[in-house]
Image (cartoon, rainbow, N blue to C red; front, side):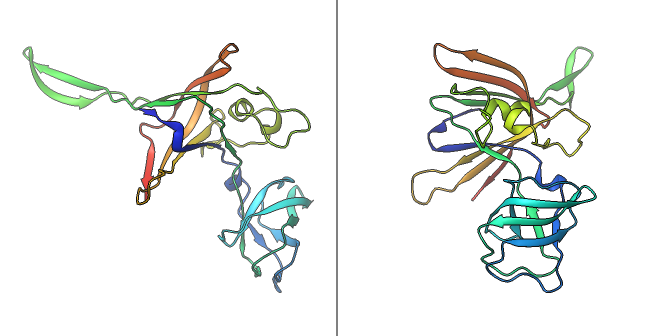
Length: 238
């Protein structure tokens, strides 16, 4: 399938948030609207400055400006903006996954789902059919060549950094639940039709691992190919 990217937003997403928690508000009195620091528990590691989180499944997103650790786990968060909804003891603190909006330019994204069938013969005649070995999704993504890696003063990684878990993406976490496997990310295609009444469609290509990068300086395009360790994309509409 070749995706027309005119009305599609493409994101690279890792598995960072769930690997840390969730954390919990740790104050029996809770925290009122306007608070900018909370004592927390439940985290299994260190929350990073710049990480974003939601409280109790809410839609308001807060950004960590500083943090304190005890025995290698974050136990206090300072953040911005101030709380817009009061937090109570044991409210969940859901650290958001790292996410990068890809700038495509005139590029394309192609993904191929494959299925092999095995045909059995009976005395030379077609008889039974069964499914052969499973095949991963093949993905090719062409994007605009601006910078291949982020500068030290940048706050977000480049596309190639995110795919390779380096530079400003060195703290990204694999999106594969099995962390012993090689690092991977999820590719998310958010199709938002411009016509009223048309449903939004979300296409998720989970566990993408790059296998090749082709850098074409004359056209200013980078092509990355790889595979997803799944047979089909996850598609939702509505």
